[in-house]
Image 1 (tube, rainbow, N blue to C red):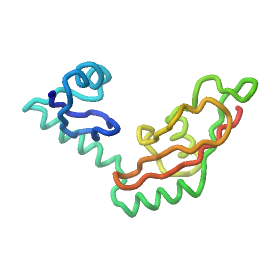
Image 2 (spheres, rainbow, N blue to C red):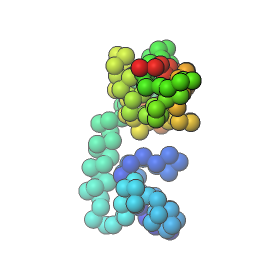
Image 3 (cartoon, helix red, strand yellow):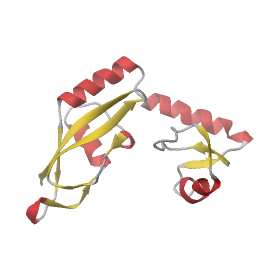
Image 4 (cartoon, rainbow, N blue to C red):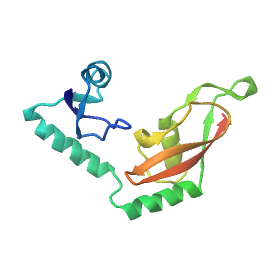
Length: 149
């Protein structure tokens, strides 16, 4: 087992600043090469506190605030325009960064792109539903409409 410090959020494992034990192969072949984690050491306590401090400033502070943001997101959907070819197929896919920018442009709250989960890649015109994790206990379903640019 390898002891690591997460530098980015990993679904099902933890948030930045968490110290986790994972199998050696998972650490060596996936987490460390993708810069999702760094090896744990005694001197890494400063790094852990810096990561946690940065995460705290980005997070929604209270459960009530998260619920209010969830209600506003679920009440209004967002529209993303993308280049499309014949038959409504997109050239590429709609990214989580584009969805986060569309939320902000629509007057919604600032949402971190890493908190948006798209079940399957959005590669065609139409309406989709994505999950936005706002707080460990609160997530919102956001309606995304993809239109031709």
